[in-house]
Length: 401
Image (cartoon, rainbow, N blue to C red; front, side, top):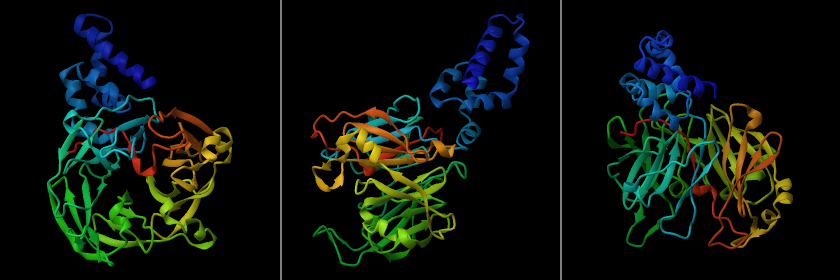
């Protein structure tokens, strides 16, 4: 709030100086206007939605705000999750796109020219999406997008690899099955995969390594970018990671010790990255009490980070405790994402129960309603969002071209 007030005062001082150069405020305005470091320090701390009005203050301010240096400084901490973009219906060929704010920001509008998009992956403010048969990378904050050249195979799995604190360039990792039978639309018993990488720096795809054997799950679901690698948690067999810069495959360790049985039903668990941490979270309502695990930076193993107990939410929202009409083995809730805040005690899960989205504090186990959900078109105790429908939205000035 303080910085927002200071920025407004700075803009007013400069405008006053333009109108009355002899005013007592002119010297102060000149000092502020001449201090680029101070201006950048103020402007980089403002919400991105407030920047357009400051571009009109002067040509100099416009050049500062639109410079690559400003974007790089503003993107040094790409960890604040402002909201979730969600596909609102699994019954449509192209689902509607909803937005749930987790901060006080406006609903980001996408692009009329990219109507009917399906989001595939999100990473640090950029989104990989598809409409018709074309893949795109877009920045919903700046409204910029670029279309990717066609990869080697039409069918495949794309994962976005991007960290603006390390590089302004991004990569897209495409995994495709080399022994897919297009005639029978089926796969052979043993699946071989090939990796190719798109680089925004070169604007082209290139093959990486030789085909390898892996679980079909990594083909169906996208990977999660963390620690310089795309990470896949597979339903069975080895889970894998792919170091993007070194173009090297590795095996993701499984949960060991007494907690091993927790993740026996792997299809209920997913990887979630936040603030440089990789988590393993139960995202479908198999149990109301479960652990959240965190991976060590050196891939040496998992440890219990949080212990979750949703029983009190079930008391407050009894519809959650009913079994899903579509799957009686599961409670009526779905974890949409995990948010690690700067203060550990503020970290929370975003959970969808029938008719509502809830924030569950991972430290003190308190909870609060984030928003109501319109259940129109579904039965009363059904869910309209699941983990696979939710994508982190992070405000960013990163360029997609």
